[in-house]
Structure formats: C-alpha cells, structure tokens
Image (spheres, rainbow, N blue to C red):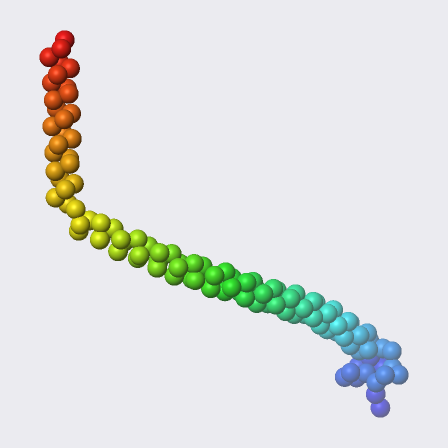
Length: 115
C-alpha cells in the first residue's frame, strides 16, 4: 500500500507533495528549454549574418585583387618606359645640365660685375 506524497514520481491522480515537486521541475525544464531555444535561434541568425558578411567581404577582396593586378600591370609598363628613357640620352642630359650651369654662372657673374 502506497502513501500519498511518499511515492516516486507520484501517479497522475495523486496531488501530494511529490507531484508538486515534479511540477516545479517540469516548469523549470520548460523554462530552461525555452531559454535554450531562444539562444539557439539567436546563434543561428548570427551565424547566417556572419555567412552573408563573409560572402560580401570575399567579393570585395576579389575586386581589390583584380584592381591590384591591373595596377601592377600599369606600374610595370610605366617602369619599362622609364628604363627606356633613362638608357637613351644620359650624355645629352649631362651636356644640357653643364651648359645650363655655365649660363647661370655667367649671368650671376655679370650681375655681380654690374654693381
């Protein structure tokens, strides 16, 4: 013979002490389950947003990569042109610089002499 309130997991018809303890645990479990459900939903939406952000950042990186490639090509062509220019007329440039220096020197000498 069983006594009310002393049984383990009291039968559904018995409203003793054990049933109220079981109800409190069940309510706590429901509350924790609902809290966990909200957290999982938040984490899921956050991971989806992170996925979208990663896709957009990858798109930006791909665009930057293509722009850097075109800039590198442009810079390489410019450097080749500068090399060609620097090889061509160094002696002429040196002569022009010497003539300009002599001209400036004589102009300064003439100005000083006129005083």
